[in-house]
Length: 147
Image (tube, rainbow, N blue to C red; front, side):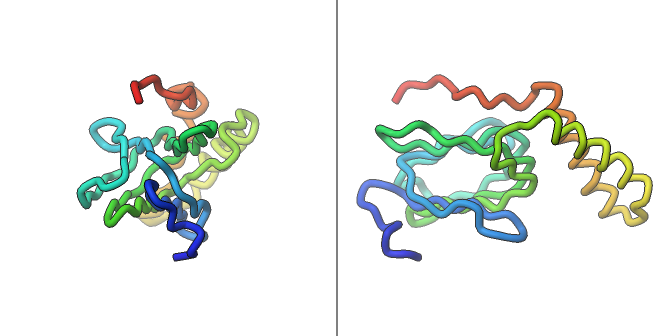
């Protein structure tokens, strides 16, 4: 772990997709879109695993504007003040409706050419995620909660 990520009073946060590491930073807290409801991860949390569902992942640092990433699904592991999220369908640029519409059309075409069951499940999941984005079911408005 890079030395600059060891900051007292904070946890390390890693956002990884299957092909690359996207975010490697420190955070005061992280809000995960987890199966069963959003989960706030704070420093010194007990070791845990969570299934990530389509939604907004928020990274908070005191005195800074929260950072939001849209994710389609994944897993999160919390241990020893490290929150690691392996996620698929990470949208680093928030939502671009034109791109999402194009990606949806491409995914629907791709579904017609996929022959394996696993491949079909992957494409169907992508289609579901893009439809949620386009229908406004995934909100990027910062949640209200008491610090």
